[in-house]
Amino acid sequence: MNQLLKSIIENNRRYALEGKVASYIPSLAKANAEHLGICVATLDGKEFSAGDCDVKFTIQSISKVISLMVAILDNGTKNVFSKVGMEPTGDSFNSIMSLEVKNPQKPFNPMINAGAIATTALISGDSLEEKFEKIINFTRKITGNDEININEEVYLSERVTGDRNRALAYFMKSNKLIEGDVEEILDLYFRQCAIEGTCRDIARIAAMLANDGILPWSGERVISREVSRIVKTIMVTCGMYDASGEFAVHIGIPAKSGVGGGILAAVPRRMGIGVFGPALDAKGNTIAGIQVLQELSKELDLSIF
Ligand code: GLN
Image (cartoon, rainbow, N blue to C red):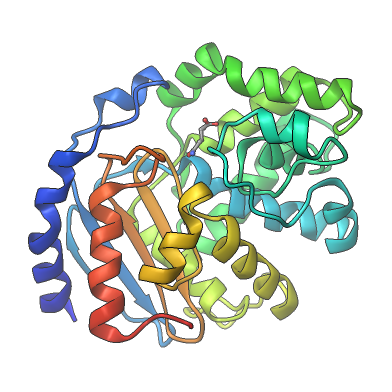
């Protein structure tokens, strides 16, 4: 497996040249566009990796999967989906249009920015710190990594420049789609986006989802089989934003991307995969990382369809 991963990384490095690192969050522009790494975590606890698999990156939108799980653990599935939908938008991840024109009752799904801000707003706690502790502790548990933390520089960089997210959040507050202190909700959202990890951490979260909610390395159940099913289904339809359809056709694995260059991909009952390559395509997905997943999916016949 290590050999296979190594050759897939080398075969696809050239695609990074066609992408660009995210720069709308200024501190992300410092990433090395040539990095490309992968880690595979199988359900019997084995891990395989290749390329730049030890480089840390901020998980960005991959955190939407984590906050969705935490919000469901806190409120139950029914309450969460009364505030956020389950439908793909076909628009970019930070689009305000679908929120205003198409469906003012609730944001379309928890994998776009508006939906994730609404989901994060549902996490309970007496203070911002307490809510964030919940998110970070859950992340540490599902990665098996107690050292998981946030990248302070990226967090501050997004907090200073995140006016599009501010616009989405204030718009939702004005429509009573979210309640409470908007700046505090945004702060929580910016922090979760700045959680830092490696391909290995992402692969482990994916392995838990692939394993129907049980941590493969300890046998502990962290979410129900039903919640794991719902999260994976939403990843299939919405996880790659407006590229979700094409990704389902070519790769066929429930996945979630982030503008830090990561993809979390959970192959039900087979393996978790973490991929990282900061050069992005026009839709904000890692350009070489998608090619890596496509080759791996073909080689190992991973499509669920
Ligand atoms: N923090 C980023 C934002 O809100 C996350 C977006 C992403 O990864 N697609 O814009």
